[in-house]
Image (tube, rainbow, N blue to C red; front, side, top):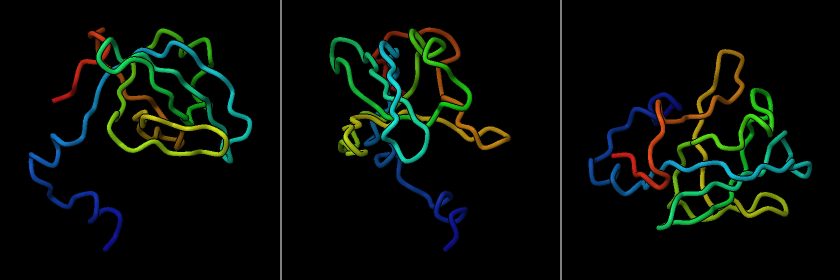
Length: 119
């Protein structure tokens, strides 16, 4: 089965609801020179319920550290943590490939409360 076929495989609504997708604000960004591919280490504030979580993101082509601080992003918050070299990534920050393949962050169209859940 090809990647396209896998991506289009139907899932139930309950399976979709099991994926906890939330909005958070990037409050800290650090270089990640140990990563195999150029990446940044993010600290994202998901509000009082979830608090701050860490994420590694390959977003260096389109974003500078200064552009990221204070930006709201969308992330999956209930995947298990993933060890990426010396860094433990706790959430999956969502992005889409742009025309040249560089990752474009998924973000809300206007500000919403940190921790708001996508449904």
